[in-house]
Length: 56
Image (cartoon, rainbow, N blue to C red; front, side, top):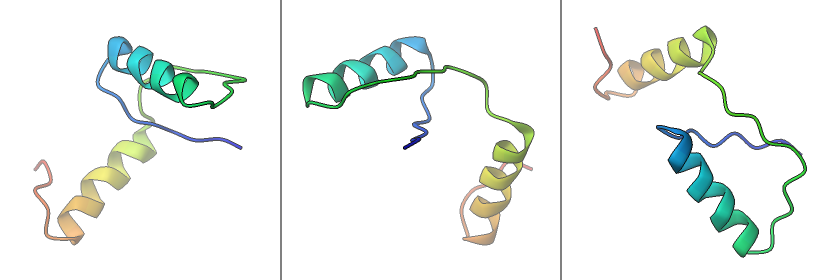
C-alpha cells in the first residue's frame, strides 16, 4: 500500500515518520521528493474549481 503525505520540509517528514512508527505503523519504504508538475497543476486547478485561493 502506498500513501503520500505532503510536507513542507525534511524535518516535517521526519516528524510524520516518527509519529507513524510510534503508533505501530511499519514503514517499508520512504521517499522524499518534490511534487510532480501534474501534482502541482492538480492542486492549483482543484483549489480554483472549488472556490479556493489558487495562485494566479
